[in-house]
Image (cartoon, rainbow, N blue to C red; front, side, top):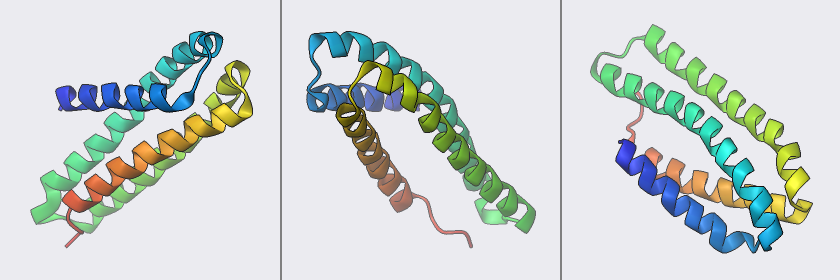
Length: 127
């Protein structure tokens, strides 16, 4: 799983680099903030993956209590994700113009959409 995650991160970084159209000065300022953000994002991704694992482990014997815990964990993680984005917005705004920050968040959202689409196709519905 860690190898897959590293491959996705590497591809994501290439996608970001190819689409951000950064000057050298912007790149020098952007990439350290990006790396810091990705480290924080990884913590949330780990929580989400653990929640999916819990779903899989309990799939055949799902109880209402476990289902409720999975839902609450998912929603809490979504809230933390939004908090993380909001906390990094000023950091990105400090190193890039708003149009490029918007582009960056668009790219992040597109990557998230692809990953979420793939997950949705693989994860069965609750029984």
